[in-house]
Length: 249
Ligand code: PGA
Image (tube, rainbow, N blue to C red; front, side, top):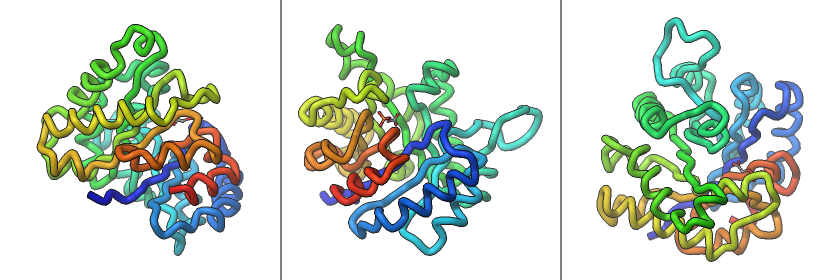
């Protein structure tokens, strides 16, 4: 079953609004691959200017987080409606940096996924093991646990809209990429888990990205694997290399 490749940049906490517009304009001519969905996930404050900068191009914009309530006394938080009205279409949920530094639990992330879907945003739901978990041999058990918790109570029709990003924590920002076989093994296990939760047709429809030091030289090999349908790219998404990754998709 053909799944459309999706390459998303995760800009993390980088780029002021004016820097973000300059980067978007630099990257747009490099990412024109008709076979690939291209997304720039940017800091909240950059969403409006970057949406403006990508108008009329193939690039979509995403947020990097959202809050679970619609409005009210939650000082400093940003709602799904605010993100959607700003013109973003995607939202990263459960990145390992949020799980670790902001103590986001699977139960909380499950609520975020539901809120994003309710408001018509496409969640890019992240999962992935630590180095200790990999060395202990519990990678697949742990990632299955995350997927089951994060998708609890979500229908098959809604699940088909979600993009899952498998990001081994030890590979993020370290320059240490999972081998294509390691990445494929876990992405395949995620798809098997989705088939258990839902059914094979639903599992076959859901796109699974790999993330963790994806770059211009390893992207093609990773993206050639049968269960890897794209990439969530951190460091290399801030450079012209992102264009080479999109071209490999
Ligand atoms: P990296 O980050 O590509 O810099 O490893 C990936 C991510 O955190 O999404």
